[in-house]
Amino acid sequence: MNTPEKDVILIVDDSPNNLGVLYDTLHHGGFEIAVAMDGLTAIEQIEYEPPALILLDIKMPGIDGFETCRRLKENPATRDIPVIFMTALADTVDKVKGLNLGAVDYIIKPFQQEEVLARVRVHLKLRTLTKALEEQNGRLLQEIEQRTAAEAALQKLTQELEQQVEERTAKLAEALNNWQKAQATLVQSEKMSSLGQMIAGVAHEINNPVGFIVGNIALARQYFHDLLNLIALYQQTYPTPTPTIQQLRAEIDLEFLAKDWQKLINSIQVGAERIQQIVGSLRNFSRLDESELKPVDIHEGIDSTLFLLQHRLRAIGDRPEIEVIKNYAQLPKITCYASQLNQVFMHLLNNAIDAVENQPIPRVINICTTVETGEWRGKEELPQFSIPQFALVRIGDNGQGISEEVRSQIFDPFFTTKPVGSGMGLGLSLSYQIVVEKHGGELQCISALGKGTEFVIKLPLIPGQML
Image 1 (spheres, rainbow, N blue to C red):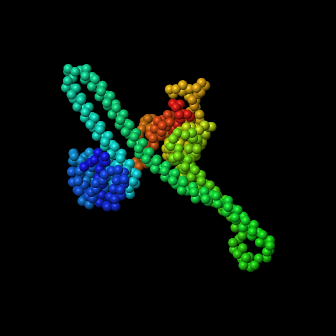
Image 2: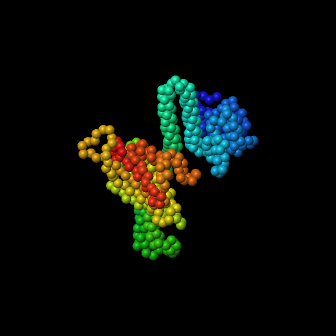
Image 3: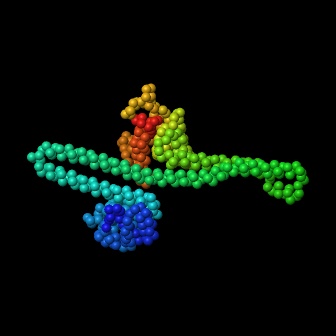
């Protein structure tokens, strides 16, 4: 039976290897685990020991996962248990079939441990919240019925009850909205945290050998120069070399080798410096050591993000390059969460590239930064002659633009116009949260069909200068 401390997760899979991987992952994640190797055994086991969540394989001996799920959902005692399908299939038809049977999610094999834990935790939280909402709705309905029965004699109380219902309904709507934001933040934060750690680790591992190469290029250049000087002295001292030396000199073409060596060592140095630039951009983008508010140059963050997106900007085959026009003003350092702000730049620039990627020439992205003065809206008083200032970052494209209907929903969690599998609709929602809630700024979308799209970020130069 379930304990108050841990949730029991039932894993149904005929593969011992998959059972072992999932058991270790979930056990280390703090869950109690039950296992079954076929659908019928799982159904019997669930009847006397219901789990909090079921991880169900599709292909199994006997009845498959789809049939197992159908039987569970037909039984009132088990239909509310969340079912997450596990499959190596990536076909949309299979996903739709599973979701129509009542499954809440899919996990694709081979398993990613962080993804499995994140999805399990999200759906357990969702189940807990759903139960709480159902219980609260039940209490509200009971209260409404009691007061309705006494409506003739207690008209005043009925009016008060209606007011209570409206207030509680608003709170429930607010709670649901907060839950959607929390879920989006949870999934995206875990993903970006893992990405940031990976980027920082890769940059660190690359930086050491590249530093060794760059540090030794000057020595290699000097050593070769010394050898050439030594050969020149030998040529002066012994102007008539032996036939063996003459033959070897002709074979290696000493004069060409000396000239080409300089080109070779210069190419090595350019390549090593290029790798150092990439490493610097990776480290600047992740900025895991700057999790607190700190004054930073946001131009560095924009440039680092553009550097990481060069593979999408440059010309490839028949596809011409995407031109990026930068118009930077002289900005002071802005006190902000640097790594989070870099995430915003990544989301907005990726969206701009998506907007112009399939457009005819010219394909242009404009990035403009300016300083703007504004009115003070903080609680405390400003010193005399002090005028609040804000930084504006405009990222625009010459794509097709978006309609007013889409623009009004663009910052909603899980809203996306991209094809299935191309995104979860969390990027702009998370960007809005970072700019508005984390930094007290503004994030606007200016667009119209046929006129391109521009996102405007407005940030206070000093924390507390509320917009």
